[in-house]
Image 1: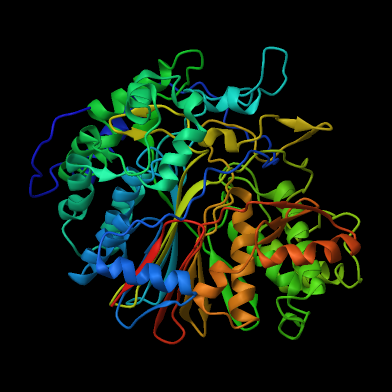
Image 2: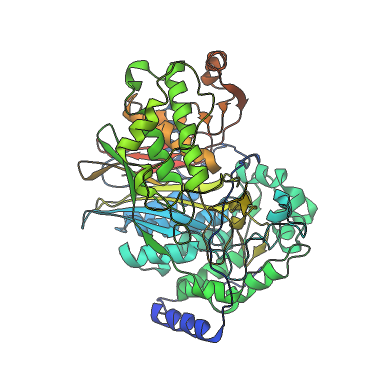
Length: 613
């Protein structure tokens, strides 16, 4: 798997050196490629990765947090707080914050451990969106660390020779689905902008756990068992996750020396270690050499990758500003549209047990998803009516569609104000739920919300240098056109696929008050919307809000979380005209409420905890 090497004390590869390499690549390669934009899709029908909230008790501090979570109590603190999906990762972030690091420093430590202990969800081979509140400057910044399509990709990437879309897992498993990994670059960019701690030391816990071993959690083991057939297709992947041909079990002691060696190189050289040199060559060789389904990723794609700063998208709701990531994320737009359409309705008076409240929430979500499917894509490649979609007058108009007493017969696409033509076809892509979310507030008053992913559970199933590679390209539309019209989210070279990830910082009077986000594929959007309604309209605390049962409507069918009190609403929602489906809904919400000190909530559906002081 790899050879352990001691950490060196400092960065030896500068950003300047990496930029020179990029320039040399550009000069040396002739790009005879079309950069025209095409179109996009959205089905979201594949089952989520395995859940599991089995306890991972690593310390007395974690044990107390788990007790609070089980009792529905938020974790309280005054100085700093971190909430993430695994106690080992949270402890790594807590150590950094306790020693005076910033939220950006802590995120690096948290993400490095998450890539080891829940590799099915995120890691160095994936990407992320980050929302940052900087207390010193009083500014909100969003960083796009989304993967990009290789320069050799074409709009026909996921079509057969006859022009028909590939089956989903035909496209996912193997190299064809792999986009340029982005997470290492995002980690470094956030640290460069906002970090205070020394970069190499942020990887200490992850390197130690990888080298010395950690106990496999219930969620990781159940995810492996569920996906054993696909994981078994590639020898290196199978050797790690299926030793001796059997899936890893809960409690197994697992070492990953290859990941430790990769992190040591990352700590020494910075993200250039992943984007140039031997690691980059191994990534490309793994993708292009994948048996039966090779991909088109090249070393130039890695060398050229850049994190992009984008304008935050904010939408008003009851005196708050709900802020997050704009395109290629649909998250902030769809959450903002959902809440904006509800502004005129007194959800507080109705209460969380009201079928009419959930009729309104469900149909507002459907309207947001209708616009999402038509308009949202990478705005570097296609125009997106961002301002029009969250304009208060437009949202008021959309809200008037909810004035009846029964479910909408259909959720029509709107016509937000826009200076470009809006002649797009509806999308039909999938947004899958193998993702993780990190919320952090540091002692300096900075706040970070980052949602991080490799897309499907275990991504492409390709394993290299101790980590998995993403399958993010299958977030594009497999079709380029529908009914003679282009789809906004089709594949194009260098394009970033649309996402539902919704890292969110809620502002009031110019300061942050709530930090949250969730995994869950396209259900992320209603998970976040519901949590904000629960906290703002129904006065639930952070832990109560993340634990509150899910009712999710995206495309007409109302998904109701099984084995919860929400199932009592099913007959009334059916009477109101909805089709319903009772099912497991596996979110992973992580919330910090800053309105009265710091209160953290970790989703009881997964293994996460909140720690703070």
